[in-house]
Length: 58
Length: 232
Image 1: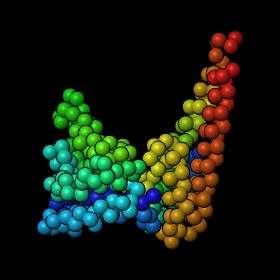
Image 2: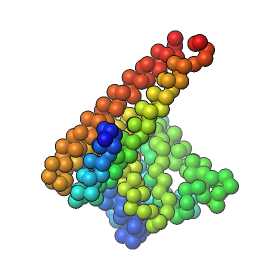
Image 3: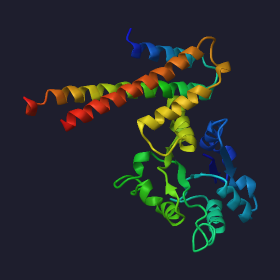
Image 4: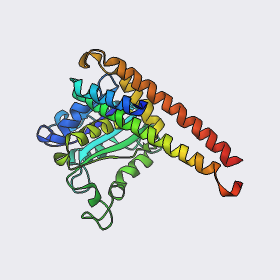
């Protein structure tokens, strides 16, 4: 399993086991923020690929 | 940073949204919650005490239900009484200069109602101009508001997102970037109580913090490479 999926499923498990409402909200936010980071990385990598393959450099 | 939340609500005990927000106030942080109707049931405001309170805080937030595009009456009276010439503005004033000022509004309709063509016709930014003008006149920095529409219809997941947004409004630095949200979240994860976690789960929290930090490094590296590519 990829690290991204692994940490998400681990955090989901921790969320379900937590006995505090505010802590659960914090854990849900952690999952959301990590997803946002992974998406940002994916987008920047895509942008980099696009830049490196720009026709103006051919 | 010390935050003062000035709440005005005539029936706070009966308000589900206000009670939810009160229970969401972050623990172990320098936050003062100040409900005007509880402190001044007769409406007589202790002006000096209020001005002192303002001076002691760096971020001032008004929290209220948006009644007829404004605040409940006591908050307006508070503004008239407390934000005086010589204290908040004027030749001898500007005691609030450099502080941050923001609004936390509960509204009874969908967020999209507040726009041109929507049910209310005007945006929250347009309707809250008097508060923005207060910030300008008193030389405070106006923050993005936290608008809470139709709390009663929110599902649990949305309520949890609101809890976090509220805590961030109270304690996160002003800049609203992914990097500043990462910083805030790491700080919160570091101080979360292990006693309410299952045995061994503390380690996962630590791994999540490390992952967030590593992802940040990757994002910064990609930014640096992209900048080089753009320049070449």
